[in-house]
Image (cartoon, rainbow, N blue to C red; front, top):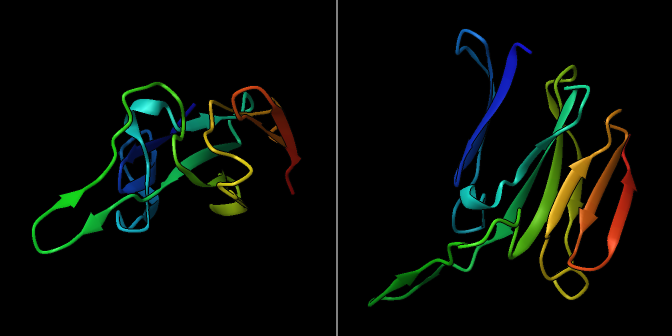
Length: 133
């Protein structure tokens, strides 16, 4: 009740109720980014952990143009790169699931179990469950 995760396309931070930052992770938009419109951060019901889905960057650059894909939907990750799980008591990432784009094209749903011991991913028709440490 007294801690929150705040995110933007380029970072995620953990703050206490007074706004003091206890953790920040910055992402390079050339490598990966968080889709703000897709609700990519999900917390467990017990409030001990949260998961963040990041997207593979489609950033291309040449002398004439730069382009990046921005989601218009409400899915956590349209071009998933990974999912990381943060544990508040450990104050660090405790699990990273690297996504193989040939096996998982999009993440339509994302959840942590109420006890924060499992991660569930809906890939648009198949639900995958992962045990967490």
